[in-house]
Length: 200
Image 1 (cartoon, rainbow, N blue to C red):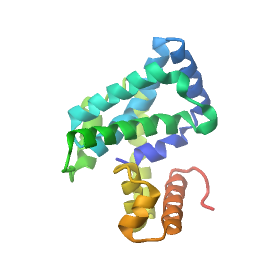
Image 2: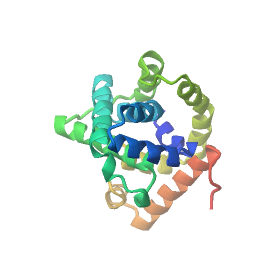
Image 3: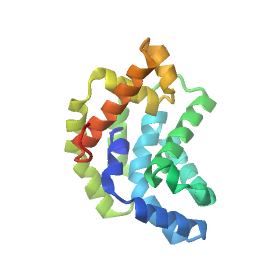
Image 4: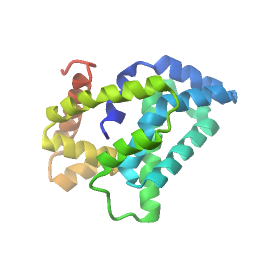
């Protein structure tokens, strides 16, 4: 389920999301609720994949949306999509939580736990979002098959352990250029499997 966060950006909601952030900056609670409905199903399994504990993931989710409420005006469209901004915020919050509490052990069954969390206590209230999420299952399986073990390893080290490309190159004893190429190719494969951009 960790791939949902990477694949979900194919939804094409950038303009609507940016408009919601402007409304949130004006203290529009309904806009925050709409953004929550759209992103909670993506951010919750992402946080759960990183922290491995459901209660911790729920707290991260609350912190992220509180930060969005307080700092919506800091979003700069020229630097990237709302999706990237929000997912990066969630990823960083999750990694900070692990480091601050000195977690040393990660769940080996986090994919199953994330799936159960979505079905048992899904934070989304929008039925349409639930249907869309369920539709990702086949896409995720296809995307996983398209990645090599090295591409998967590099993406996990970057997205879920917070390592820079330089750190990954050192850890894997590979040239930095190779790491960058593998990461780019891996993301291209995921997008292609999701029906997005063609691989170049």
